Image 1 (tube, rainbow, N blue to C red):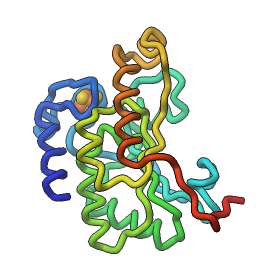
Image 2 (spheres, helix red, strand yellow):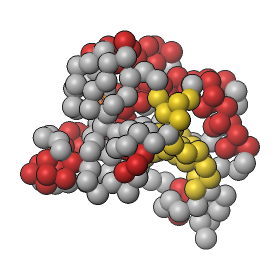
Image 3 (cartoon, rainbow, N blue to C red):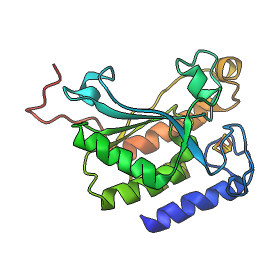
Length: 209
Ligand code: SF4
């Protein structure tokens, strides 16, 4: 895990954490399209009961909304968070403690909303949190605009992927999310997620009602 965290941070030196490949040195404070350097913000940390029923279950999903995004979708339901930068700075140590608090409140899982541009800090946070006793599943709730190599590095940290497949037309992706190459990258990413985790499985005694 430690080697993966190191490699993920190295990718931020000339950032190619996502297919936008901005090439900025985020470790030195430069920012690319996601407007995030190494310091990162979260907008909310709560038990969420409105996710897909298998994710929220009865006791809620431990949902963490990360500020900013590697996409710029005009229809974003979290626009003030993803595009206007609403949120507060947090350290990996502080976030690890918040994850433990969510687990103690009964969260079914840790639900990372818009994680792609902050995967290195998330990996470090999870490493710390697991040492503190975090045991519930970790879910990546992402926009599906991902790099295969980054997903490979995140494999030990993520248990469940819940990605978007926003477009099957690059023309629409350009028009509504300002990206050139969503479709091909999204399909490669989804295949990699499927290779890692396979099909969603339920325990016989799971109940979502
Ligand atoms: S994560 Fe951000 S800075 Fe890095 S390539 Fe993607 S949009 Fe650019």
